[in-house]
Length: 274
Image (cartoon, rainbow, N blue to C red; front, side):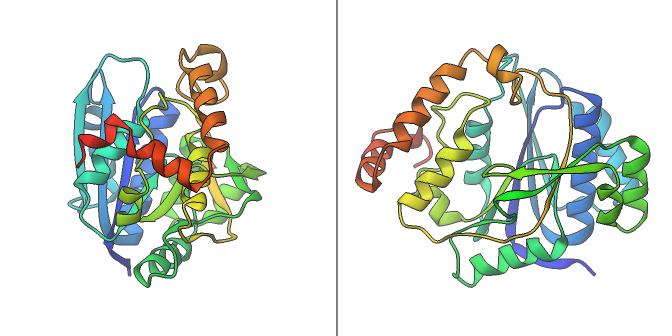
C-alpha cells in the first residue's frame, strides 16, 4: 500500500545530459510513484524534451498510472542549468503544505519520507533533511541490470548497497519544507547560477533565520552519473559563474539574521513571485 503524502509536492528540475542520468530519472520517478500517494512536478529545461521522447513511456511500462506527475518543458539553449530559478517556478505552482526540493538522482527508505512529511504536517519542523550529516551517503554504481533488479524486487534497497561505497553527506539532494517557510525565507537564491554552493547557503540561511531545521539520521542513496559543467566537481574548471557563486556564498556565510533579512528584502528576482 502506498504511503499517504497527499499534502506534499516533490519539485524535480531535470536536464538529461547522459544515459545514466536518464536511467536515474526513470528509477527515481518509478520509486516515488509506486511508493507514495503524492504530487510530483517535473520541469525539464533543455534544447529538446528527453522526458517525452525517452523517459515517459519507460515509466508508464512500470507504473500504470502516472497522473500524479505534472510535467513541464521549457526550451532553452543556455548551457547553464539554472536550477534555482526552475525550483522557484515549481514552488509557486505547488499548493500543498509540504514541498520537497528533490534531486533526480537520490532515494532513501520510504519510512523516512513519511517521517519527514509528518514532522512538517504536525508543525514539529519547518525544514527536514532526511539523511544524516557525515558518512550517511551510499554512492551507487548503478547499471541497467542493477536498476532492473531493484525495480523488480519491490525496491529492495539492499540491492543498491551491493554496488556502492559510503561517503559523506552534507546539505544537498533533498529537503522537505513547509511551503510558507520556503517562500517567506527567500526561496532559492537565483543569484547563484548553475552549479553552486547554494546547498550550504540554504542551510545557513534557514538556520540563521531561526526556523526549525532538523535532520533524520538515515542513509541516502545517490545514483552516480556523468558530471559535466553543471555538476560538481567538473564545474570547477568549466563553469563560467564558479568564482561568482563562491564569492556570493562567502559573503552570505558571514551574514547574521538581520543582514540576511535585509539582503533578501532587496532581491529583484523575488518580486516576480509576489
